Image 1 (cartoon, rainbow, N blue to C red):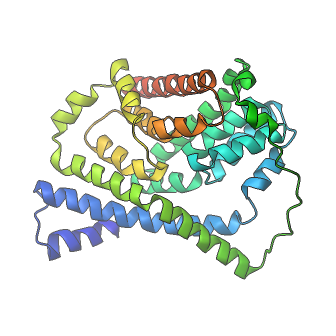
Image 2: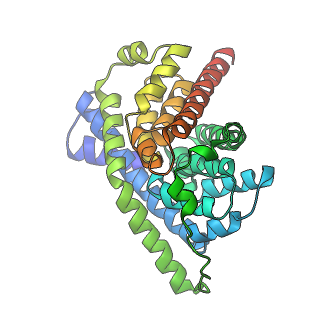
Length: 320
C-alpha cells in the first residue's frame, strides 16, 4: 500500500524515473514517511488505551522497595513498555532514588526505556522486518538487564549528586483514575499528539538521510566506509552514533538504507543503539544528576556492549 502510494506520487504523477537517483530517493522518502507516521499514530493510540494508567508516578510506585533479579526484570520490562525518553531521565532518576530502588535497577530501566519500546518495535518490524525487530529487542533487553548487575558492582551511589539524595518528592496519594471509554480515548489521543508532535522532526530527518543514502550514495562507497564487519568498523559505527541524537523511530529509516546498501547487520545494530542510548545529549542530561565518574562508567558499559553486539552478529552472519 505504501509502496503503491509512493509510486503513484513520485513516478506516475511527478514523472520521475525509478532508475534516477532523485526518483529513488524521493520514492524512499515518501514511502517511509507515510508508513512510519501511519504506524506511529495507530500503535501509539492503541497502546494509549492499554497504558492509560501507567504514569511515571505509578511506575515509581510499582518499583518501590524492590531489589534482586525480579526487580531488574520488572525494570527492564517497564522500560520496554513505557514511552519515556531522555527528557524524562532526571525526574525518573530522582523518583527511583527517592523510592529506595537500588541504583543498578534504576540504570537498567534508564537503558531499556529509550532503547526499547513497543512503538519503535512495531515501526522497525514494519520498515525492516520482524527478524530485525526481534534481534534488536532481545539484545537491547539483555544489555539493560545485565547492565544493572555490572554497574551495581562499581558502587556507583557515591557518584550521584548530593542534592538527589536530599530531595523528598512526597508520598501523595494518586487520585482514582477515570477508566471510562471517553477518558481512555482522550488519553490515547493526547499520547498521539504529544509523542508524534515530539518526534515527527526526527522522522523527517531520519527518512531524509536514509533517502539520500538510498538514492545518491553508491553501494561500493558505503561498503568502503562501513567496512566488511570487522571489529574496527563496528567501533567506528558506535563512535559515529554518539554525536547524533534521534528518537528510536527516527533512526530506523537510516538503518533501513544502510542495510539496503549491504552494511552488515551487526554494524547497523551497533550504530542504532549508540544513536538512541549513547548520544551526547542523553549523557549531558544525565550529567545533571550524576557525577562524571558514574557517567563515564555508564557510557563505557553501553559502548562496550554495543561493540560486542555488533561483532557477535557480524560473526554469526559470516558463519551462517
